[in-house]
Image (cartoon, rainbow, N blue to C red; front, side, top):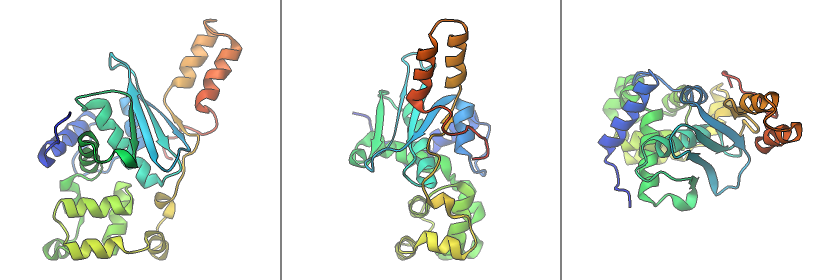
Length: 244
């Protein structure tokens, strides 16, 4: 069984991934851009409440695939992607992996969660963005929380738990922040609430369609097989756009 990572090791692996992406430890990540940079073929599909996503890779590590649940909020999708990147790149026991509520007690899942938090919300970046007075009092305001959640593209719960993990807020502040209606607060503050809502259904990231078309044009597969391959992942139902 995989050993549980220390927080320091999880932070180190996250920094390593950021270095691979040529992104510093103060900058937010665009997860769709990250998937493109790493060439991880990704499909967003509606899944059950218990399943957040899955990932797998070929034995030679040349090809990686991810499925993301479009029924959960976009912020949660970003965390799922970061979580699955751990399994695809750093898991000591790589295998087809399912991410869901029932698996969270597994050491490998806890490792992936620590990595995902560090990847999405680097310690240096968070500290630099929180007002000095709030850092000193360990009391981050809902105004700051909303601003930084939007900046780093994470769900409210994920953000608050990261602050607690880094000991940047007290337990009382943690409880207060987790007790707010984040969609209501976002709307009242004039923020786009899409981060806290589901989305991206049918979106495909990667060159699966181009590869399938090349096989068809080279007459290696029939037209029927070509359309069957596209229909398997719903290619064309969503658009692969950098700004989504």
